[in-house]
Amino acid sequence: MEVNFNGNKKTLYQSVLADEFPDEMGRFGPFGGRYIPETLVPAFTALEAGVKQYLNDPKFIQEWQGELNNWVGRPTALTFAPRLSASWGAEVWLKREDLAHTGAHKINNAIGQALLAKKLGAKQVIAETGAGQHGVASAAACARVGLPCRVFMGAVDIQRQAPNVDRMRQLGAEVCAVESGDKTLRAAIDEAMRDWVSDPGDIYYIIGSAVGPHPYPYLVREFQSVIGREARKQMLEQANDLPDAVFACVGGGSNAIGLFYPLVNDEGIKLIGVEAGGQGSGLGKNAATLATGVPGVLQGAYTMVLQDSDGQVQETQSVSAGLDYSGVGPEHALLQYIGRVRYESATDEEALEALSELCMTEGILTALETAHAFAAAKKWALKHPGKRILIGNSGRGDKDMATLSKHIRGL
Image 1: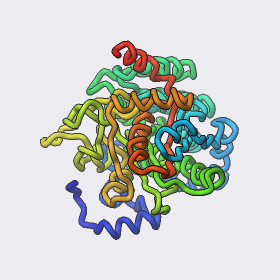
Image 2: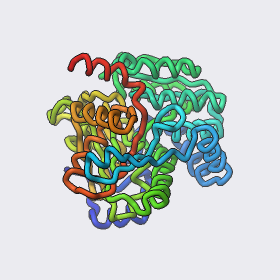
Image 3: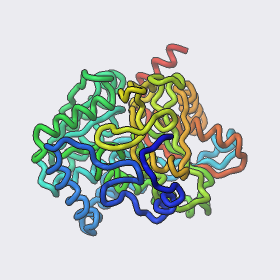
């Protein structure tokens, strides 16, 4: 990986353990930063000031935690998977974000940012979505705090995630189909950014993953870290020890950074992120950004990007709409760069097989995104018998029934 940075990896590793990132420039070592049009500078200046103020305000944190407990349904369960454990020869535990209100981890961040938008005096909220879970979460959170919500979603994703589109509309959000670009998540983010530029004073943009210009990667990480904090405490209480390995799927990377961040200092734990291997290793056949991407600027941050030799961002392919993204959060890029987290990929076929196995053995219909983590975890477990594994079950698979039914008919 060629990275535009002169820093020592060992020094960076120690800085990560010391919790020194992002720095004052919004960088995670060589990655991150803020690359934005001049018209958005005032909005980002106000947002950064608001983040510094309210994320350090005990009253705000108490209000957010109250919503998590009384509305979202936290803490979510830690579930032992006995039949999966017997099959894999490992001790398998699941962190059940699928049990959170609206069906995925996205709500942790959405309600946090909706509360922040209200504090900052926003008159309207916009959001983007791929699989639809962040769109649903944003619509629900905006209804909760009393702000109108407009969600941008690629036309391809609207077709394959129709149930979530209906849910967003039922929750009062306006859903805007994006027909430009690849018509998936990247195009939806581009369109949301353009809409924000049109009225940065009154619009608040809830970014759904740990991507984009500073302070969004930091902000999303802070709201999603509740996952890892809970999981660490629950593992000690229920399993009497920490896991040997932790797995999470990675698209933009919000659920993974939320699970990994509180465990980074536990150096005995292997942290493994799993990207979408799609249909193969060639450019355009997958969404495995960290495995096959190169450094570049995408949607406001310097990170790893799926782009060709001319710097043109490439379209992606994945059976899961939520992983179908050409970039990744800058903190994940750093964690790979220093070697603290290993990133792998699982193909469409492997994810579908893993989803089916989980349904049949544990009675849990997980999301297609999450199934990628299960596929990689199984491979690791079979090579490391007797180990304790924690898998971030980031969302439920109700939204994927049309895709799953199509696959079953194909078989």
